[in-house]
Length: 168
Image (cartoon, rainbow, N blue to C red; front, top):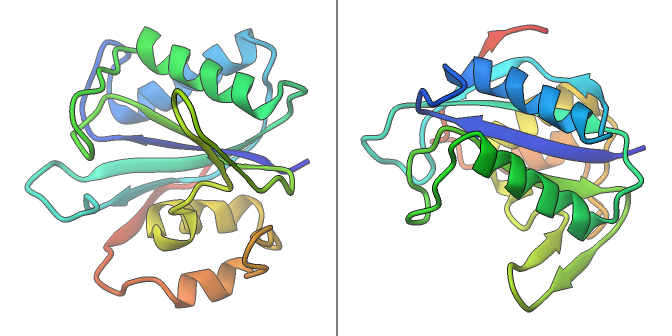
């Protein structure tokens, strides 16, 4: 099973600190019948693109679900909303961000409404996704490019700053 969801937050919100928000999001996922089977460590990363925002706390989880990709994405957006996420402008600070990274070997681009693209179109460019993903799925292969995680990590922009905060 290779359904991966990325977490990111850099503001304290109704559920508490970013780390507390991750715990709350996992509880909400599981209450909606989407159990988390693996969870990465927490990672701290500089905002991308660079800005004066606080650094983000990030993690990746693997989930077990029979929901179709669009339904899972809709659930992630509902959970964000319940947790206080307000979508204002791209790359704004946030109390929670839940991204559907990959859904098995699906490679899809969907137009209309909110676009669904799988795997996530910037997954391979983001240290804050690849470092935690490597922890829980070191042998994962990008279904479009065929690249393995170490190769994607080697191609990262070296200016991206990231550090491990806490092992799970």
